[in-house]
Amino acid sequence: MQINQAIELLKRLIATPSISCDEAKAADIVEAELCGLGFAPQRKMNNVWAIAAEYDAQKPTILLDAHLDTVKPNAQWTRDPFTPHVEDGRLYGLGSNDTGGSLVALLATFNNLSKSEQPYNLIFLASAEEEVTGVNGVRAVLPELGKIDFAIVGEPTSLQPAVAEKGLMVLDCTSYGVAGHAAREEGVNAIYKALKDIEWFRTHHFERVSDLLGEVKMSVTGVQAGTQHNVVPAECRFMVDVRVNECYQNEELLAEIRQNVECDVVPRSTHLNSSAIALSHPAVERLVAMGRKPFGSPTMSNQAVMPFTTLKLGAGDSSRSHTADEYILLSEIEEAVELYYALLDGLKIEK
Image 1 (spheres, rainbow, N blue to C red):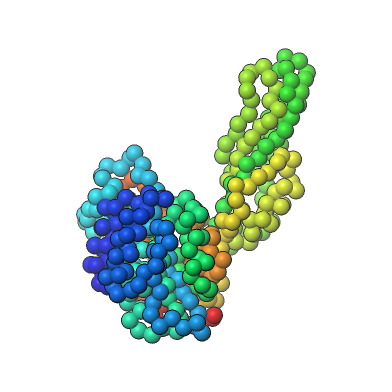
Image 2: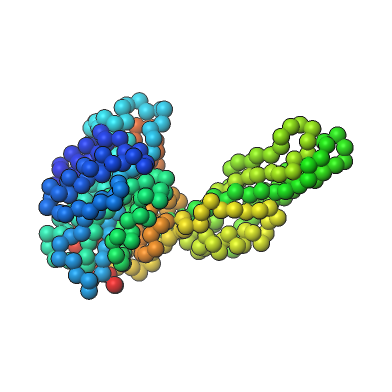
């Protein structure tokens, strides 16, 4: 698969709206492309994957994953987000950077690597619903793929290896008081009870600090209480955004939070864990030898729901994601294809 073919594929994907949970037409395009390259793609809902020939159960398996879906275009776009346009070496369009460039580069790499025997099995996956961490995305497909020993998740990292990634918990907290008339010394004000816990979330520092991701970060991002001015509120609800470093699992952190606050704490989920890969992993060592610099990523990806060793690496710059007039450099796609191939060709990993 030549670089020009990969870029033309990306243009077709940009021209095909694929907002999260509505990626069917984009999945059709990738499925047809895989067929045209001589593979036998499989599909579950809007997830499409293919397995390179000569699968050997005695070998480890590497997964190449990038997502098909995009966020909704915001109102600040000055271009049509669904019209691919090349200008000064930049390809503009929704999803070009996040993460179409990585998707077509991984597909090209998958095609090129499959032409020669490798010391591993290789699977390419174009996954759905990543932007909303949907249940019909990569989580729905993993049971179909068998045991995965290592995965590269294509996301914009400026082609530097993200060797750690923050996890996420969103907490719904409720402080309880007793309703009463505001004009008299009645009731117990739930807002005042919540203030103590909110202050704890604002100021608390967890013991384990990551060299790559820093501290666990907690932010109170919404508060709701009261029904009318003269009623002491019996409940105060607030939500907390918790960004978790790789030193903690979400359930462990949740237990520690509950020990330190009086309010009820209910997580919306606990499955979006942080992830990390050892610097001694053969893929990381090869990238370092090629002059790439490992770093910790504050943004989430499909890594959060992959229970095996993963590395985030892809074309584009994360700062362009979810922005108006999103673009990717054509040179970044070309460089990604070259880097992915140099990384994976002959790579030996443990099963």
